[in-house]
Length: 322
Picture (tube, rainbow, N blue to C red):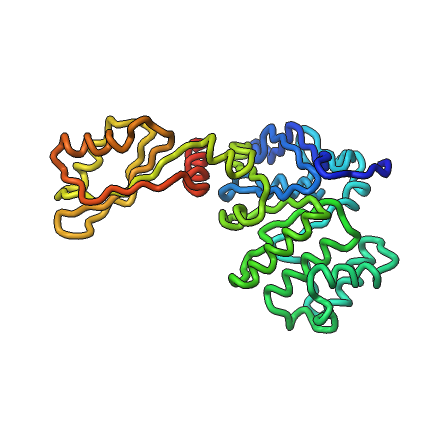
């Protein structure tokens, strides 16, 4: 690969019609996306969605069945050694050797990566990950948060252009989560970051773009703001005077195929609370919900609405694929 300087906004990763099959099962189907310099991309999806498979392909851990993947212009299938030098990978469970000190472990990783000036490189990641005071400690004696920092440090050795992080805050306490979030944000100034997580707040706090996968395909790929804008959904919380839960389901049965009633429960004698989820925006929906209840002589005791949320959009996108 030629030594091309990659400026902000240049395409770092290009994935085209990526497929991965396991015998007769298609784990990933026709997945395409591009990642630019400075991006922090968040992969979201339920278990089995295919996001971990995509990340394993990007790191060269597994092969793919079809399509193409290029990192810094390098085809990962034809030039595996070249592209791997551009990747720093932190799996969900960092590959640490607990009987080594932090310095010994990072020196060992430098050897694996072929880094000759290891002392200079280790000093650099010590500063980035705030590990200098712990370099002589056994990894087994470190807290979960510091073990995660050591995992990040090994991924950063060699100054890779791309960082791929799988559940980077898994198992951390709230203070440690904030520390790792801030570190990832700081790293994005000089690295392109792809991370996978099940935590929506993690995506919202860190990522500049979100890719949502379901059943092996991408169902959304945009900024959080644009995903919310293009996948309208409304949630209403109601408390009504009614003695029968089944009545609530009956009167809304013909309202819309995109209306879902959830969390129906009695909160007092003859007082029912429930939630209405509309997958798409309707005109005058407040009036229509109120009107259908009043037509059935069900007094409304409380009527609240909440705006669109990433959580609700995520659920709707996933449910629409099943």
